[in-house]
Every structure is written in structure tokens, then in C-alpha cells.
View 1 (cartoon, rainbow over the protein chains, first blue to last red):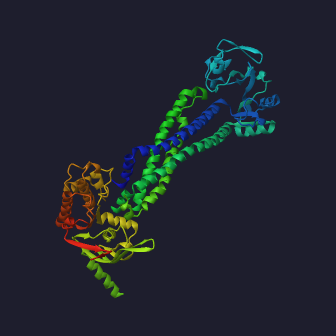
View 2 (view 1 turned 90 degrees about the horizontal axis):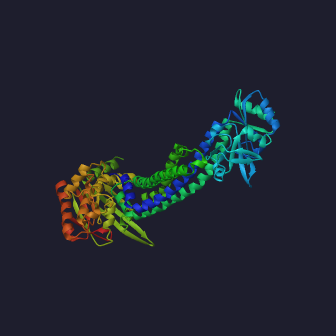
View 3 (view 1 turned 60 degrees about the vertical axis):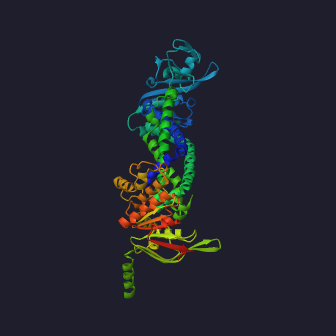
Length: 360
Length: 232
């Protein structure tokens, strides 16, 4: 029975107050973890799928910005450039993919010409595969669909990753002529170091940007880390408000317990021990709040996966809640709470014993 | 040099038998423009094994004297020695250690921690926590079987006995009690004073109480009367 177990008892003594104080931390941590978890999950999903999809290099029109995220469906390689790529001896297994928008029954739909069907979960068979949105508007397997004046028969459907858009996936060979044989990207394997070949492509073929797998992974990281920071910053405000309420409540606690603090000092506890016990109390609020917030966030993320997983893709909870996030959120919330407790604890430790004992 | 050395030795020898020694101790408070002498040059020695009550009207300085004796307050002027040690020279941390080891406090309002059981209250200040030893002190106070009770579940007399057990738990050289019977009826007041008397008689614990109650003071060996910050 030391002074530090008194901290825990003090939290239990004013249960409602402790829980309400913790609630601020819980809400902040939940918001932070859900938002950061979602972007983290997206990042790892994107990296995983680009890693699987492409060869050693991916070549794009440099006017589109040259990154994987740059205006999909609006920037294309010129036929001349494609011919030059095909003539490069360093490249083999060259594949052209195309993605473009087109007018369809008065709306815009997205046409994807792919050379790699293995990335798509098809319900039916490959060939002409439509998204759920189109399926719902009557284009079921076996029905006819007309795109760019070409009538074809729907062979399959897919629901994952379309984000509610009207999408038709075709063989690249079939889709390319619809876009004047201009591909969005060319992927290829390289003979020799991909980094060297990449530089050769960019220097010999005007208007192209080539990226290796590691470039792409870095591009995704760059883009998502900015987003994560922004979203995390906003959610941190909620956590900060929660932590500030700890300062307030601890000041109330300390004032209310003035006489008890006087007694603690009278019976021989040092200022440092009094300070420590109040910091511990603040730390416990932060730690317990963070743990509860994490549990709620994990449940919410799992629910998001269950309800929206079909649209956003195959993301696992572990990808959204990596260890670094769990550790830094618990550690961060606890540390911020200790900081919040610092001023009230310092005030308590500085109380004049005689005056504190006289306090009613 | 020699002369002053021998002086120190002499005073150390003298204080061996003295638990407390006040040498011209002043405590002056500034209240606005007015200066209040809570203690006005107190000279007092208290021998080991004494049982003393300090009486006097409100504002006579008896509580201040007790606070200085308990190292809760420092003299403005003069020297206060405890077991031959000048407490003003101790750091805050050393003062706290000294209080914990050498002094047991008993308060008028018991000042038990409401969230702790009787046993936990006694264990709280214990330097080497030992539940069996703590229970032993509660037994001695006639509180066998009430270890787990919270202060709110105990009578005033019982609460004060828990606080005496708490004061004794580190075998202090000195028990300081500020109005220990102030919140109790006469029957319980008598029980508490009886316990303190027995501790003094049988175990030789030095006890100083501040009280308004002449009946409580009758239990002690010596009554010190105070007026206007000094001893009569």
C-alpha cells in the first residue's frame, strides 16, 4: 500500500468523473486511429497491388505528371513512343494497358483495357467484365452492351474496387483500338538493372516517364504520408481537447484533495512522491483512455471492412492497425496526459502543509 | 576553535536525552501591515518519554508550536532542534524523511483516507510495508476484525484509533496530537487518552498533545499553558 496505489484508488473513488475525463481521450484516440488506420490500410493495399501488377518498369506520358496517381484516363503515350519502346532491346515481355473515359447512355463510364486479368476477382469469365453499377442497371452476364459502337456480350461482373463507378474491363487488345492505339501505360521486364534501363528510356524517348517498382512504392508513400499527416493532424485536435480536459480535472482533483495532500506530506511523503502520484493518476487516465479508444477504433475499422470492403478492396485489419500506430497512440496519449498532469501535480507538491491541513 | 568545538560537544551531550529543544523560537506572520507573533521567543525542552499537553486559548500559538515540533513549519527566528538536529538545515526531502520515520501525527479530524480501508490507511506511511505488523497495531487499538472497514463505516472513536495505529507504524520517537479528542464524545475521548497514556507508560513513547479539553489534559504528566505566543 504505497502512495502510488492511492492514485488508482483515487480514480475509482470518482468513477463518473474519471470516466468522463477519459472519454475525451477515448474520442480523440478513436478518431485518430480510425482515420490514420484507413489511410494506412489504403497505402498498404495500393502498394501491394501495384507490386503484383507490373513488370520491372512502367512507362507513361510525362505530361500527365509521370506518377501513378496522375490523372488516370486522360494522359496517353503516343504511338511513335510505343514503337520506340517496343524496339528497345533491353525490354521484353512488353504489355500495353489503357484506361479511358467514354460516353455511355448519357453518362461517363471508365474503360479499362488490361493485359493481366489475375488482379480482378471476376464473377463469371474474363472478356467483357462490368462493374456492379452497370450490372445493377441491367447489364447482366449474357446481355449485350455497346461501347464505342461495338456491340459485345457481358461475360462477367466484378464488385471490388469500382467505387460505385460504371466500369467495363476488356482485353487490352480490344480496348486499345478504341483509344486510337494509345496506351495509358506500358509495362515491361528489363534486361539488366531496372534503374539503368529506366534512365535509358527517359533519355531516348521524348515525352516519357518511366518508373520502377521502388519508384512507385515511393510515390505512393509520398502521396499517402502527406494525407496521413493531414488527417492525423485534424484528428489530433480531438485528442488535444481531451488532454486539456485532463488539466482541468486534475486541477479540480488537487484543489478538492488539498487537505489529503497536506496529510500525505505530514505523514512523511516527499514533494516528489506527491508529484509522482498525481502524474501517475493523469497517466492512468491517458493510458486507459487510449486502450479503450483503440479497442473502439479496431471495432469500427473491422465494421468498415465488413460493410465497405467490397468497394475499397481487400484490406485486412492488421494493415490498418500496424504495431507502430498502436504503440505510438498509446505512448503518445499517455505522455500527453502526463504533461497535462504536470502543472496540477506541481501545484499539489508545492502546497504549504500547514495551510493544506487547515483546508476544510 | 577549541572553545567552540567543546561547546558543540557539550550541547550534543545535553540534547541526547532531549527529543525536542526550542531555543528562542519566533514565528512571525505578516498580515497586511500588521505583524503577528504566533511564537514570541519560546524556550522549551522536552525529554524523552514525556507526556505533555499544551493548553491555551485560540491564537495563543499552541498549534504553531506543534507545527514547528512536527517539522511542518520552520521558525522565523531562533533554533529548533529535534534529537539534536537543527531542522532548518534539512532539505525538504530530508524533512519529509524525518517526519516519516521520527514523528507520528494524530489529527483532530482523524484525516484518514476515505478511499482506503482501516488496514490500508495504516499501511500507507509504513516504510517497510508489512500487513501483519499493521494488523498488530490495529489489534492493539481494539480494532480486530475491522481491518477492511472504510473510515465511513467506523465511529469517530474507531477512526481516531486507526489514526493512532497509523502514527505508530514506523516506531516514531514522537507522537504529536492536535486536539485528538476534539471531535469525540467524552466516553471516546477517555478511551483515546487512555490509549495514549498506556503507550507512554508501557512503551515510553514521547507524546505531545494540544488540547482545549481539561479532562484530556489530566491524563498527561505535565500541562504547558500558552498565551500570546509564549509559555506561561
